[in-house]
Each structure stands twice: as structure tokens, then as C-alpha cells.
Length: 316
Ligand SMILES: [Zn+2]
Image (cartoon, rainbow, N blue to C red; front, side, top):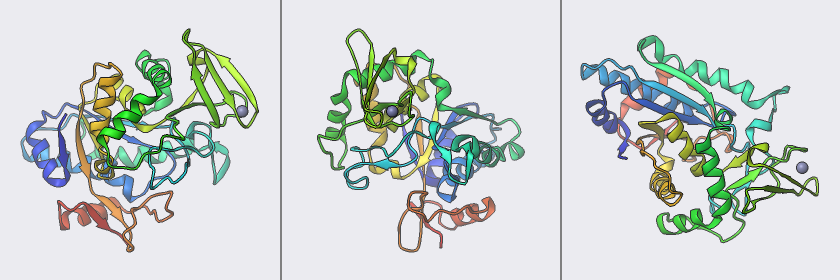
């Protein structure tokens, strides 16, 4: 694994890559704004452009992974201050209705909108293929099951890695990482455990009931670090393009160390970090912060090119 930063990272990668690599772009499918457009649509375009300048025609396979096993909203003692002591407020995106359209699931609503925008790259680079995929489609893959089992059986492994490799504050509890979706009320509120004989037990606080079954009888919420490992393995990813906020959490060191601790034989992909969009007050653009907006691709490209290697780009 190697880390590449901003536009200078694109330059280095364009020299290193052959053009036929598999790229992973991952997103929670519940909105689309300039903060997501940069890693998903703008930076892949710049990378392809730079590759051509190096006389290589891009033939990348771009996997656009919709993380529907992640939460719609996070909860915890203080999500900002303790970013690892978190859990879903209600449930995963897989079981969330779109607020603007009560008859449609939020994932069904957003995936075609985001896919359409990311696929624009295929017009300028016709050999590039964008392949959308839902995380829940990995459910029956044994590489995902292996991570689920390790996460359930060794709950402190991840805690100890974070303690060693991140500077963020960490509380001993609440400590979640994985929660089953209640088969009855579809919420992720409760406690999930796996017995020695691999029987899954989920106590739902909302239903005041315990549900039992096999591992794959349930859907799950999974913390994003654990979620990433099977994604890399199953899709055999060479490069991830992601926002610079991940640098702060030492995300890639943590992922590498967790894969080691779980005994997963994983080729860690290279990472290209992209600049973050902030508003006038300096707050990062985000759906949860309510300051998000969609910006036309040509406007965003120009904004980046004003000062190619800066980490923050301000949009009013
Ligand atoms: Zn329930």
C-alpha cells in the first residue's frame, strides 16, 4: 500500500499505473454533493487525463460501491469527539425510507442519481468501465462472513489497534462495530453476539426480544473499517480514491493492522486522497452538517485547478 496526496498524487500515480487497474469508489447512498463529487467524479477524471498525457489510454474498471450496510445517521456519546464510539441512530441505509419519497427506499432513490454522474467519465474515456454495486450483494461471500465472525468473536481487537494507531479519543464503552438488523422491526438497536458453535443471538431493545439463527439469517450494520476489508478482497482493488478526512483517522494504517489481526491475506490497495470542501465558516461540507450542495463538474474542476495541491477548497 502506498498513499498519494492531491494533484501531485495524481501525477505520481499516472506514471506508476498501467491504466487497467481496478479502482474502488465507495459512498453511503443518501445524497450527493460537492464533497462526494470530488473523489467520485472529478479526481477519477483528472487521473485519466493525466494518464493520457503519459501516453497511456485509461482502461480502468471503476467499482462504485454503495455502502448500504452503513447507517443513515450516527449516534453515540459525542460523534465528533469520539468518532469510534458510534452506532446507528435507527438502522442501516438498506432499511431506510427516502425522506422525500415515503414509498421508496433511500438506496433505490440515490443509486441511479449517483451512478449517472460517475458514469460521465465513460464519455471522455470510452475504455473505462464504471460498475455500480451494492454492499449487500457481498452478503453470501465467505470473505465477508469471515470478517463478521472475527468482529463478533474478538470485539476488543479493533479497540486495541485504534488505541495504538490513532490520536482520536476513545472510550471503553459503548463499543459496537457490528449490530444485526432486527428481523422484525428492522432497527439496529441492541446487542449481537455469536456463540462458540456460531449461533447468532440478537437482543432487540425496541422489540424487547431475542432472535436467534445462523450468521447469514441476518443483515448487519458494520463499522466502515471492517466494511472495507471484504470490499478490497472481493473486488481485488488496486487503488481507492477517497477524501482527505481519512488521513486524520489514520484510516489506512488501521485497516492494514486490522486485516493482519484478523488473519486476512489482503493486498492493501494504494490510496489517493482528495481535497475537502469547506463552507465559509470552515466547516466540512456534509449531509449531516446541512451545508451540502451539488456543483457542476466543470465549475469544480476549475476550482481545483486554481491551486492543485491544497487540502481544503472553500465553496460559499
Ligand atoms: Zn426489533
